[in-house]
Amino acid sequence: MIVYNVRIYTLDKANTVYENGFIEFDEKILRIGNMGDCPGITDDDLNGNGGLLYPGFIDGHSHVGVWGNAEGFEGDDGNESTDPSTPHLRAVDMVNPTDQCFTEAAHAGITTVVCGPGSANPIGGTFAAMKTMGSRRIDDRIIKFPAAVKFAFGENPKMAYRERSESPVTRMAIAAIIREQLYKAKRYLSAVDAHSKEPDTDLPEYDIKCEALIPLLRGEVKMHAHCHREDDIFTAVRIAEEFELELVIVHATDSELIAEELSKSNIPVIIGPVICERSKPELLSHSITTAGVLAEKGVKFAICTDHPVVPVQYLPLSAGLAIRGGLDVQGALRAITTEAAEICGISDRVGSLQPGKDADLVMFNGNFYDVLEVPAAVFVDGKRVKF
Picture (cartoon, rainbow, N blue to C red):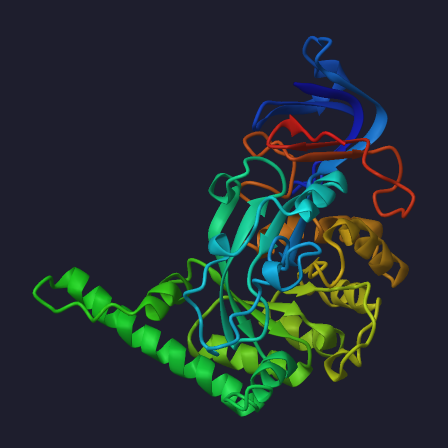
């Protein structure tokens, strides 16, 4: 298929823009260029009539299909708050791909979401990056699994376990539980590696929690640390440095206050929800200016909704609110496309429009961040989304 007569924002490394261009694709992008180079048009192709074409939007941290839409307890699968260390829990076993909110996301131009467990446990489990449309079977919609291992610091684990009168009820205990599990996994991995080099060496007794942390310790996936307060952010940094883990700070409410330190450490963040009230002490510093400050200080960041805290379809509006807070339009666009893809380790598939990448596209006739605008067309893996 070809979409033609569109202004194409590729968001590739050169930030190429085709003022009047075309894009040819099947499941993958085949060619992009100026209209002068466009191949023959057929009745099956789409005239964009001067619309604005972008890569499909990406929500880098959400819980779509985890807290079921209007289902109450029956659909509440976000937190196994009976054990503070659950790295072995898997997003692919918790996300319901038929949740109506996936459709609402796609209708808003969000073609990829990174989904996983909530923040009740210091170690919550593994996240999955997946498409918002496609097969009814989640396995067929996965881009990357595991995409990250979820850790949580601060208020949420404290509250969850205080209600149970169990540890952790302090920040000290949260860090200690995380550190203990990582040390166990590190020792376990050493024994596994020793066996691979010397088969006569005994394998350790199987430990599903340690097995789940092997990709993290090997640097194959990232540590996504739920943190709001600046001291919790630095605790996550301390632990990540101790175990040589690749760290991403998620939510990062206080990141505006420590932007220079984050920039020097080259630590990326996923901020959000942007549309949010200061509903708990950790959100005291919440501001729509955070994205603009991070951009000014050179911190790599993406914007998320944290669905269902903010409905996933309002990701473009969240970017718009960041613009209102001082972020430039280009930075806002990159925060829900290219930057999100790079931070989440899925930029080989999505996040920019380049030959060979997935044909995930969204077209608008006006500004993508305008509350009155809806997409004129959305494609996921080359298939047009029906509205």
